[in-house]
Length: 402
Image 1 (cartoon, rainbow, N blue to C red):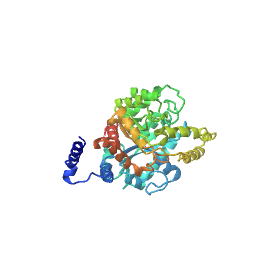
Image 2 (image 1 turned 135 degrees about the vertical axis):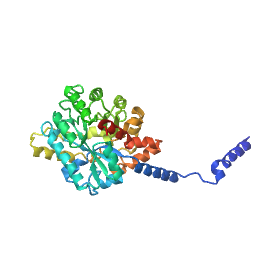
Image 3 (image 1 turned 90 degrees about the vertical axis):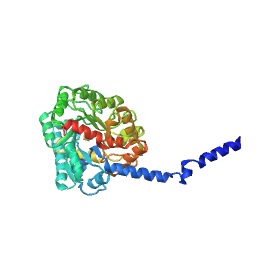
Image 4 (image 1 turned 45 degrees about the vertical axis):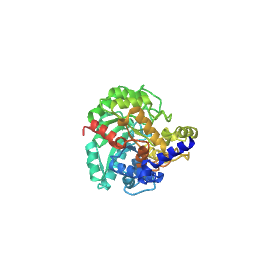
């Protein structure tokens, strides 16, 4: 019986397709090279859109020249090219210390910084206001630059300012930042309205009317619900991750993920280590001290003092020295969002530039690793194209009409 079994197994091996063809089984190295080849080709051909990056802070505060490769920060025009980024949303973040009277001024300063980059490198980057612009610029080999306001306090409770920001080329507005404002509750501040108040709903309706995308990153769960009741257009969460994987108030619950999907919207997964990894978040909570008290509640509110404090805050946003989580945490959050919201409602909103990121995601040049990681996890190429940018392009078309 033992001899018969041995002969049978020998026959199976000898008659296998590999044995009959005389080929050796593919080695692990060969498999890795094939995945690398497929990922590189797919990433180059796909439309890659990152829906949130804080690069303009470096331009305005530090005077960084984005046309030159730099060791400062996590992005510049050469590195966008190397990372295969086709369209980049540049955040206009008026630090909450500028509220309530100086936020519009700070936002205009950031817009001016964007226009200075555009004016200096017109052959490499151009402003995009809609999906048609993105497609045109990608065909020309230019980076499509889009702008998004991060924090509704920027409009200083004035719809005329909202309309003028849109006229200057702002494509989305994140309704709050870390601060609850006069019309919407933040996820990381004391709630005042139970979501949106009447003026907040008016803001959403006006954004729908003029073709500006409503962004629900940073807002409270109740604000998400109110936004989805008020809006007639798809919304985005430009740079958020999943609460089920890291219990940070900035992350989206599964209920919120499903609700955004029902709305037809898209969630851009954030790469910030504290939003991605529970252990990192726990260590940060222990480490965090009240060192920002003066910055959060400045005694002097002159424009010069506010600009000085904003520069200090930027210098404090770097790496705190805590061990970084593994790269796979980014893929885990993409996986979870796809499982809960569906493949048509997930994108990339890296939040890069001065944030601590997982190992292997040092800067924008590492974005192709996302494509490879998704291939290795069994995603189809068409599904990866949707995550890299196709899903957001759809929302951009639906909201702007072009």
